[in-house]
Image (tube, rainbow, N blue to C red):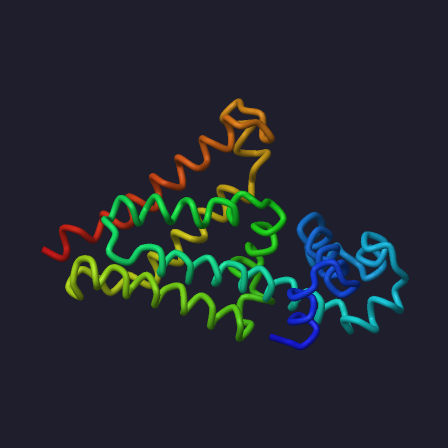
Length: 214
């Protein structure tokens, strides 16, 4: 984590924190290529020179936004691991939805996170690769402890990444999905439907390893 990102995360109401939040909103709406430093500066209510002073280039700021999102995800992952000790599988799944629903239902966060999965220019970033490996290894350890090492197939790593990519694609296309379902994208029914879907997806994934471990 860079010093600038560390300061912004510690003090979100500071100028660095406000610029980071403005950048996340801008990148989420328009993508990296469609967003200019002038756009971000305008969103933050500052001039471009101030943005450069606090964050450097647009790419530096985009890297910081991606890293900030990933750090937030990793914090939720650690909290889930701690909370699932000595819990039943169903309790673990419910806690998983509880811990991650807020992350996955934040459209700006999800749209930015999609870059780390689908945009080849940014998918190879060291922090992104390391974080995704951490996620895979955490879930691998969880499955091994629950069902035994024999329950982990050769394609486990790819299956975890496919699950996460599927979830991000689902919640990242909020308006499109809501239109197909005939629901108000900002209404409680849509939110509840997505949460139930997340529970089903994660539950099906976890239970697919039960029989393999027997």
